[in-house]
Amino acid sequence: MEWIRFDIKSFLKSSRHWKRDRERLEQELNNLLLLPSVSNESGVRSGNIADPTAKTALRSLELQAKIEEILLNETMLQYALNQLTADERALIDGFFYPRKTIGIFVHDYGRKHGLCKDYVYAERERVLEKMRRIIEKEYYGEE
Image: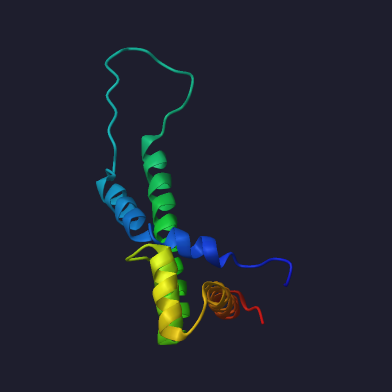
């Protein structure tokens, strides 16, 4: 489907936080009590029926689904990165996982490959398009 495109830039930007988010979710999942207990010493009653066991089970399922989604995203990213050449991978790393400022990276990459600034950005767009197509083809069945 040409009218719906995989947003590779947002995908790569959000990938910076996946490990931290997954660890936080796993920690929350591990901290959930299996059978919560409730103590209502205030004597105040509500008309709402409380089922802490069901709420805990539902929260556990929600956390597991979020963790699985992050793991799938990590797998998709790793698959796409493995399909790139070393130069393409360095370009993606420099823009989305920078060790130095973008301007310095663009200058250094351009000097190494004989490209001006505009061509470095054009090359980035070409590599992003390649990654988008790889992910769509492998995980969404798009050609």
